[in-house]
Length: 123
Image (cartoon, rainbow, N blue to C red):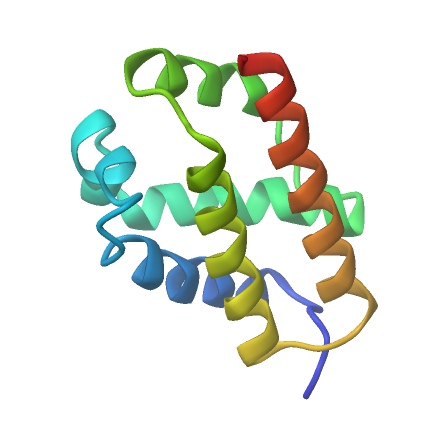
């Protein structure tokens, strides 16, 4: 199995990851009711790929404030500890299904750190 190498790899991860999120009754409401993400998936995947390109490869030009964006969502429908666990479970499962290597592990570590920071900041 190969490691994450390209933007196309990141787009594949996002597509497969969101396929899991959008059928999980414990978390899908953030994407279908609290926000309109489910109606704008191609654009959302492009934004996420740009975020991860910057995070993993130090390129991509992501200039938004990820924490503030999620803080607004949390203000409308609060994230619980279980939501973070579910989000990470689906991301890690997706990564493990398609990729193996240092970048895949780095993405897991960074995701875990982001979830931890959000939990601290939002409570």
